[in-house]
Length: 93
Image (cartoon, rainbow, N blue to C red; front, top):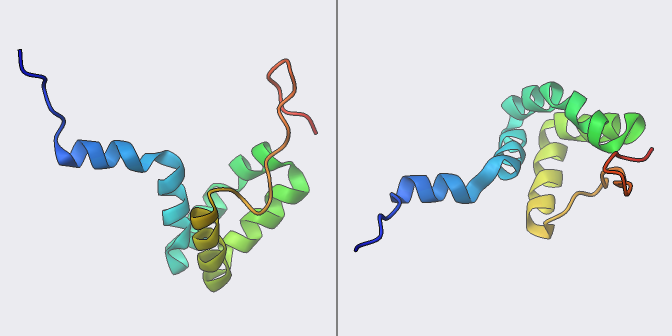
């Protein structure tokens, strides 16, 4: 039997993923500022209060956010790391 193949559109959408979509959305000059403001709560949850606010602040500045997120995409990791995950699954402060 022949395997059912995915469409190119679906394959590309699957490959991009949510993380890449957020970073790309943050890179759009003034739209990126709005995305960074919406995602500030997520950054605070993942990075802690101070690091989350600093990260979101950098993302909200149009040119700085563009450069920062572009470098993060190339490097494959954040400049400001997320909180450590403890053995029981919760994030440590």
